[in-house]
Length: 214
Ligand code: ADP
Ligand code: MG
Image 1 (tube, rainbow, N blue to C red):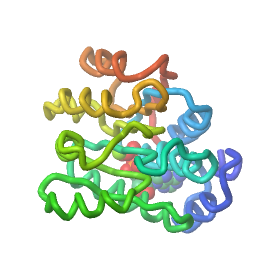
Image 2: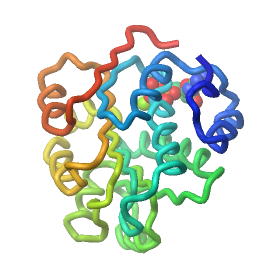
Image 3: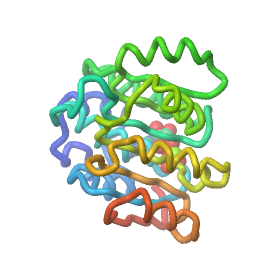
């Protein structure tokens, strides 16, 4: 399937063109239209199968085509288990945001906390974060997530393995639990811990499991 078949905003299509992609991967083909309906989603597919764009594209479509719930709060948050992964995701997000007026912010541990507070005052619309650092900023009330529209858990299984479940629950609680959309990605959907947290954090999710990548 081609990216042009999803009815995406032209600015997103141009950004994807810049990346040099025309054909979707399997997970993108399944996850993008499902996420665009506004439903919650839990999905798995192997490493390297293009999961990042599977959630960043619907995220961008929402940013460009749906009216914001709040001007103060971020509209979307992406959580990843490690700084390295957060940086990779943020690099892809920046490419997509460059075609619009959207502001993004990377919030990782190991970076200067006060600098991050200053950057939060600029009211980013999308935040890519590691769970510990985002939870710290929430506890200090450096940001609010009442207006959040979309919460993405990337590599949710690894976040649980790394012991972030308390932070994930805390972020979930702060993050407009009733109205937001939640997308969860995991290497597997079969483990008990991932199913337990999915049941807590997702509302009647669509399940997508792709055996092979591309
Ligand atoms: P995953 O999160 O599933 O491990 P990534 O999102 O990191 O996979 O993507 C892996 C690689 O595939 C990246 O280099 C990405 O740019 C590339 N990629 C993503 N989507 C496509 C596509 N539709 N066609 C070709 N390459 C793609
Ligand atoms: Mg990934």
